[in-house]
Length: 533
Image 1 (cartoon, rainbow, N blue to C red):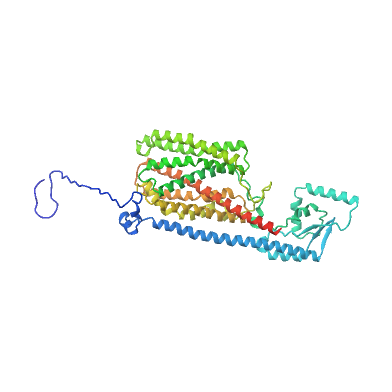
Image 2: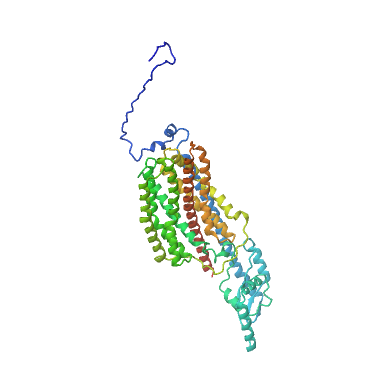
């Protein structure tokens, strides 16, 4: 090797030195295949194995703490406000009846065969007592019809003519009710028998969300697009939930079988097509869709979103093959297999589910009826706008998952192992539950502001968490050690596609959470109204 030098220090060599080593693998019979990653669950062992990052305990604890604390806050707010609303509603109705009885004892005003009971003092006391909830709403008093004096033939004809004129006037009832609410009961209110007939059995005082009971379940704008988005969201939600369940049970390891993960995702997406068709068809039927509209929506649901994904992935695949990066592309055999699953299995399942939901199931039943003419929505404060509510509300949902999101993205883009799918399941559950809770809370305060356009608002509030996830993906791009432009195109392309899928899932969760809450809230309101009557 050269001249030998005595003493410590580097030894010069004139030729190459060959170093070898041997590795002997010994099977551990005490550890099963399913529990091979359990060593990382131990806090002390994990510090030695994974260095400074540590285990996922911190992220899961963060998600659970946010979920528990926010659930307690939402429950406390809703219980307090709803109980207060129902108590005020019952108290105002009782005060209305008491004021009417007081007015009856003081005197009545009778014109043309209709007695209108009136008490100015009772009405003022009633308005002051219920000022906190009906300061902008008049208090209709009890109306009873009586005939103290018989009418002759000429008076009857004149009365009938006046009634026909008022009946055909479009603003008669609104004007009369406004005039009556403000205490002008002693004016010219001749023979308003139709008003007495309408309000003799319905003396309900409405305030806040009770004012829009005839509009709260009105169909949203663009009902076809809304139903298709909800159906696609249900399909993606079922696919994601089942995939995480299979990973948690140890059926396969996505960290070692990337191609198997993609195939399982597509198979589960195909299987959930029947559920998507059923949800879309029944929801669109509730909005009053005709058969032709339903068929068109079914075709769009089965071909729309998968077509967009297929075109987008094909473009990225063509770019990868053109750059000679075959490890990032999809083979031709895989593409044919995916097309066969989509057109041969998914599309028929969507059609079968849609047919069952439209032709064999009834539409969703609402506890209140919807009026023909939409109610005018008052001006809303700036903090109840769509952008403000969606942007602020989704921060809570993002806070419940962003720590675990960093581990997941490291597994996908930095080739790190992701091994604890039970924690991923808990984080996913916390994300869905937080989206549902924050959407219900925003929905309730929106209805209190007399804005009944909650369908699309619930979707945007629930789905806007995907915007923050994409922003986090932009920040995470600084950790990628790559100078290849194609790699960044792949990164931003697939992260954008993932954000869109998450937006559809969480938006659908927000819609059905708000729908369930509104249905229960107005159902209790109707039962209390019937009990009062």
